[in-house]
Length: 67
Image 1 (tube, rainbow, N blue to C red):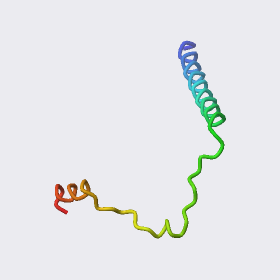
Image 2 (cartoon, helix red, strand yellow; image 1 turned 120 degrees about the vertical axis):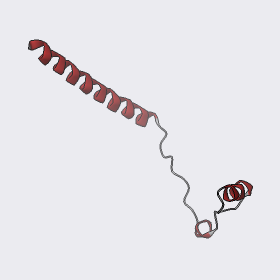
Image 3 (cartoon, rainbow, N blue to C red; image 1 turned 180 degrees about the vertical axis):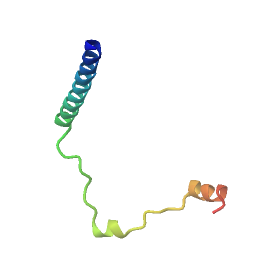
């Protein structure tokens, strides 16, 4: 019976260790990342402009799928 208790404790310790290691790795990556990686804000004109363009590959997709 003591063997089962030891194996459960071993699994728990393993899971705690992996969770701790994951958190430490994430913290290290966040600390090494550059300051701000934000996109530049859009102007009113950029927000209003059309973004959809029916290019050749889009037309082929429509033909293939019979839209």
